[in-house]
Length: 256
Length: 332
Ligand SMILES: Nc1ncnc2c1ncn2[C@@H]1O[C@H](COP(=O)(O)OP(=O)(O)O)[C@@H](O)[C@H]1O
Ligand SMILES: [Mg+2]
Image 1 (spheres, chains in turn cyan, purple):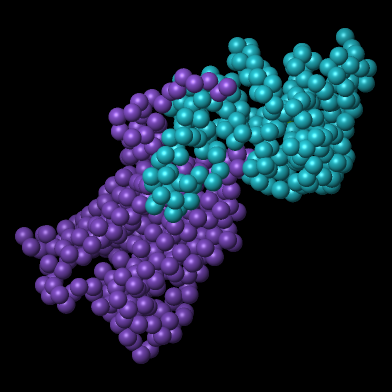
Image 2 (cartoon, helix red, strand yellow):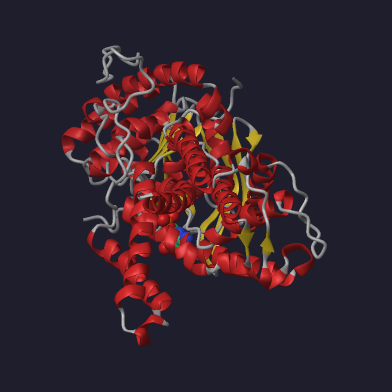
């Protein structure tokens, strides 16, 4: 493990036609930190995540993961390198069980090739037992274990958000990008979610969290970065964010 | 009596051959969400491949190599797989309706190829004469029919078992995941392009098996066997039986083939003579109505897809262990 930021962007830019959604964003995300990313709707936060995670090719600029240029790598390759992301609107595999949603994740499973599935059935079964135990541990950690056999399309929206994080954890990521994890989640699930994120962060996982709830961001995130109209308009601590006039103007609107 | 049994054997042989093709389509559509609108091309590749390799020598065409039956069949299957691989590389990024239209086009092109490449396929008159496997040893036509049926059923069972193993493995789980949400699967480390291509090739090879059995049964193949209606019949079988359920696929094949045969029989028997020339068209309408009706009233099919719960038929825990699969260790 090298020192230095775990994730950086260099002049990251994305145009949609003539519209510049993200404009030359250069940022360093600290190792082991919980970085908050705020900004009004349409500021370009999700687009920034999509570029970092390989979902959307940037118009210009670079993404560095652990100091290495990973610009243009596909999402599956980035996930294999330890970068996981969740979606603003949850994307469960609806007609699969919650447990299957999680067990799916580990890559290069013995039974994931045709020949392995047909002919290496013993080692496949042993491996699946280990994976099931790990998946059940993660589901229990996320308080989803009692839903293990439910179809993922039938659980509540909040539980889907927890499932998104559970799936990501199954890949043992070093950094997780969370896109509005608490939006539309009831308070008790939000509390669980926040506790789990903090716990994971204490154990060393880095986070970047897009969140609208300023209280949440001030309390849990350090540093805080604000985007507006595709540009970085603020970087600092939560406290500084609260009292920053530019930010109040750009994000919170004119002070009440 | 013998006539009845012999007819039932004929009926079951055809239904079982279709069931194999439906199983192939189920891997595509039921488990991977690939809309293959050109089933008949891969069925046809298996059929022509088997015929060219195993058929009787014929001075007017290149083929007729008279290879042993199983070798010829394997060759036909490989040909179907190669066609699928090429088509797949070109189209596998396409989804749903686009993939359906391109595969439909491939089927038309394939049919047109068999009609025109006379030096290889005999053109419109087709290829005739296939040394029927084990026929000399049996002699008796009636017994032979039963034996061939047994062989086709054996292949059906083997394909079924192989597919069940595949779809219940991590491979099948990954296929279902890309069927459900490709973006999410990719963000979790899966490679949808490779998975789709693998599924496309394997499903098409299974269709090729069906095609190969079909020509060795009839000892004849012509472009007329590759009409688009066959694709629709196989789709109807899958939709009626239940996409995402291999037993449903087989059930659908037998039911639709029975309905098809019975409707043809009834029309020929009881319809006014003036209508009988339209028998084919009436059957087309019937099969279209069955597809539409099923999609409206029971889109999941007669035997719907079942969830892979840990308490279900469990192949990852040895029998006798706790199947609720809860553990009490924390993550820490
Ligand atoms: N695929 C797309 N095509 C066109 N415009 C897009 C696309 N994705 C995002 N945008 C636009 O880019 C801007 C930033 O969107 P987004 O990154 O989702 O904002 P945020 O997540 O900060 O709310 C918005 O104006 C949005 O309409
Ligand atoms: Mg957003």
